[in-house]
Length: 329
Picture (cartoon, rainbow, N blue to C red):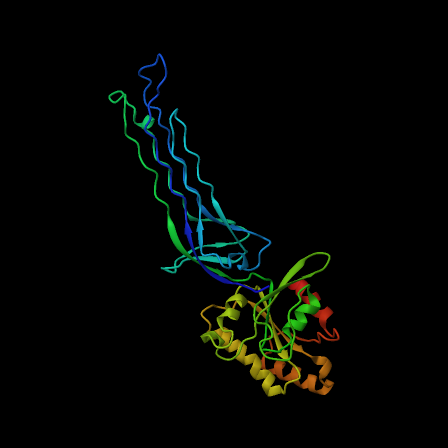
């Protein structure tokens, strides 16, 4: 199923029902007085959190979302029925913006599960409301408030525990398929992963969500390659695993690491507070002496960076990596 992380929609609340002008008419009661009821409130358009969603796919092909209008009041002081609210179900991590101004309206999260996007109009007042000692037979009533219409921009930023960094073909998809329940596409060509994939890694005590994010290239922070489609999702992960293909020569491996770090630095979001580990991948294809040289080169250049040599194909180092991730998160 395709992954959708942006949508533009128009939301329209329900109009308030009109108040009623009516007078009580019963046999033997010639002056029954005003009995016009109030109109019903228009329905709200409400964004709500749906834990079963991880993309905006449910909004595909839909542009306008309208709530029901309130019903008009009637005689015998009967209030009109309120319009039904319209619920728009959104995944965790959905940012909601006013499309014209770019103002952030709110974010759907586990702790902020409901946001009113367009408030329904109030119902009008019936003429019974206007009866007074000086006006026993008012004919005045008010109309319901008009509907509220807004253009909305929705942007999903995945919220995962771990995000996988790496240039195309660094081994991210193979890794997530081996340590989680994900089934990412795998191939020997660039940009195998064209959209984020989520997987869950679990033991007897906890679950960790891992995001396999689209590979980036130099210039991603300026929109090259898959550009910000990757970077905006990486920002929401709490922990980053940076994968480097160990079959490359040492200088190229170091350069590939620098490329992604540079793109993170140049993006408009601050990644400095996220922990990062390095995984040297495909070690089953590397002679021991070459692996030793690569590890030494990275340890010399980045002495504070934890490094894990792994092979997703034959499982080398995966148990150790998984164990350390469970300790950290």
